[in-house]
View 1 (cartoon, rainbow, N blue to C red):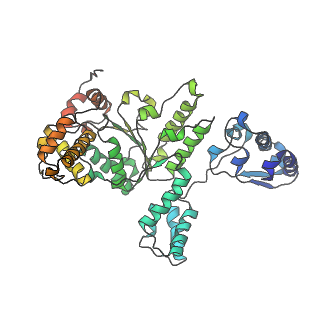
View 2: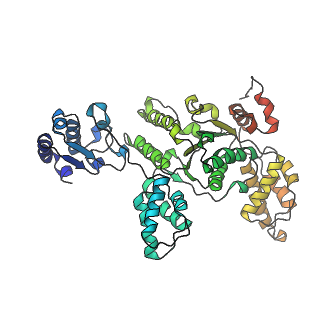
View 3: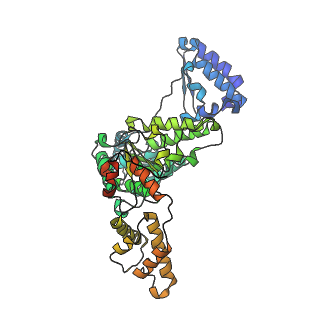
Length: 459
């Protein structure tokens, strides 16, 4: 606080001590002294502090004496980037959150040193507490003892949500899905692939089989986002969504700082699914028009998604209906290893979707076989079928004689009134097929298209 108040008076004394006595200078919350951002936006006190720290880091006299300067910050992105230049000899060291093994050992220590009510094993507790520091884990134990409440799945989940929301809620959206694979109709090939190549390998600790990233391609409304949510629910993995509207800031350097914090928050949740919707618009190289912000963020994203140390720990899944607009460097193998087409449901899948949606809303119906309605909704997406079902319920409520029951007559009338509204269905379907890199993931009727080297797309 004194250094922030009058650095011009204090720094000369500290400088003299560093250069004449072997000592350690410890600066906590250095981001408050030299915050990130353009130098021109710094106050005079912040500039003076930056000059002194940079001078100390390159001082041969301080090095000869053997003095050391230790600086602490909650987030490296909050500290001025000037001190990271190689000429200043300042080495950043990331003190990360404890991994699963470290959490398990610490939890065993806590459970063995006090009476704790819980049916969870240390391993289960460790899996549930991903993204939490040792202090937060200890707080869970203390709160459990104070309130005389057993430590359960829900107890940990509530505490974890509170901590993570406070720490990263400004830059990340945390997803807590309620529906699993069994609650979504169709997409069997995609569901089987995700189960056999993500969920099972991670559970079996065979991370070699897990793709670095997955790109879901297909028309709007076909269930790409729903599929990601179902994967998170069925696997039990943490799931976060990158929303660029939370990242972009109005001040110089703020967007890059937010994005670094976003990636750090995502990485702390391992194993975690990181979802990016409409990636074709979210990440682009950009140009000089935004002072290089888009280019910097894009470069950071490329580096992070290509880091093989994240395989099986951070699973990137992106969705798009325009894969042709995605930068080739982002789509290459090693970042998004698998491109899965999510296309219009066939008749059998549409019948299943009708049944699942009606069950999801708890609507009463006397219809047992939905195949006739499936045949009448060709070229409808899953989202459009849901619109039909809701319209049918609306019609059933308008006629008191129908008793709010979805009858065949009501559903047929709803289909006539709700026409497909998704634009460029065929165009986006062909784009998804062309992007697909594995014939096994295509519905049977589309497989022949991949055999043609001259796959044409009518615009």
